[in-house]
Image 1 (spheres, rainbow over the protein chains, first blue to last red):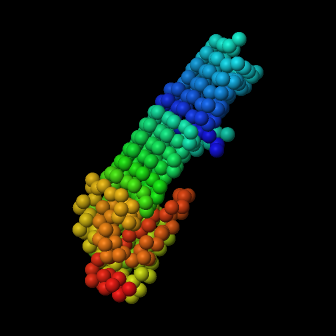
Image 2 (cartoon, chains in turn purple, orange):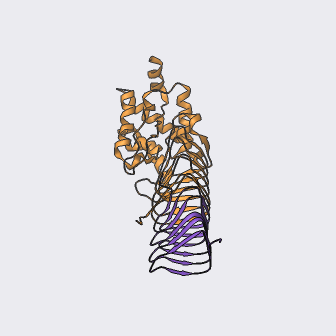
Image 3 (cartoon, chains in turn yellow, orange):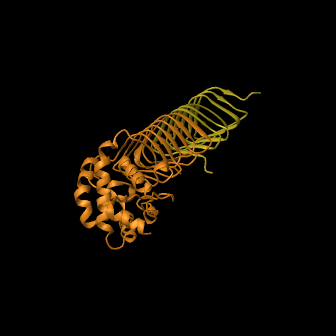
Length: 104
Length: 255
C-alpha cells in the first residue's frame, strides 16, 4: 500500500489523520498527523502543525513539527516553525527558522 | 516524483475539503467536500460524508452527499450512495444502493436532457431498436461506448429472435412514457428492483418491476461490459430493457 499521496495541484484544508505514510506534493493546510512518515516533496507546501513518526521536508513546511523519531530537512527544503524530535538533520542548503527541542 | 494523482489511503481520515486538479483515489474517510478537475475513484472501503465532484467519478464505497461528474458517473455494485447524482452519463450497477435524485443532464451533447431523451425514446426507439435508443433510458456510461450499448441492443434482439424488436422497443417506450414524469425525487434500491442501469432511474426501476413481476427474461440480465473509455473496474452495470405488451408476454409464457 502506497499510503496517502497528495498529488501536485491538489489542495487539502482541514484535519488530516493517517496511519500510513503521507506524501505531499500538493498543498495541505490545517493539521496533519501520521503514525508513520510524512514527506513533503519538493513542490509540496504544508501549512499545518505536523505530527508523525518521521518527517522529511524537501518542500515548504510552515508550522510546528513533532516527530517521535526524526526530522530531516532536505537540501532545498524550508521549515518555519518549532521542531520537537529526538533527532534532527538539516542538510546543506536547507532553510530553517524556529526553535528546536530534542527532549534531552 | 511529483505527479498529479492523489491517494487517500485506507487508514486515513480527513476532515476538511479537498480541491484541485489531477485525479484522486479515496480508500479512507473524508468528511468534507471533494472537488477535483480530474477523475475520482471512491474505493470499496471508502467513506465520504460530503459532496464529490470530478470529471469521471467512480463509486465503489459509501458516500453521503451529492455526486456530480462533468463526464460520467459510475455507481458500482458495492456502492452505497445517499445523495443526488448528476452527470451527463450515469451508470448504476446491480446491487448498488442509491437514495436520492438522479439527473443526467449537464450539457453534454452526447447525452441530451432527460426530458428530451424520453420524449425521443417514445418515437425513435421503436424503428431501429438502435442501441442508442435502448440505452437512452439508461444513460449509463454505456453511452460513452457504442460497444456496450450495442451489446444491449443485441441482448434484446437475441432474446426475442424474430419479433422482439418492436415489442421490446414498445415496452421500453411505454415504460418510459408512463414512469418518466416521476423521475425526480425518486428513491430506489436497485437491488430491490432487479437490474437497473439507468440514469432515468425511476423509469427503468418501475419498468423492471413490471417486467420482473412476470419473470423478466434471462438474457436481459446479461451484464454489459463497462465502458472502456475510462479504466473502470469490473462490476458491470446490468441492463434493463423491460418489455410490456402482448408479444413479450406471449413469448415468455411460451417458455
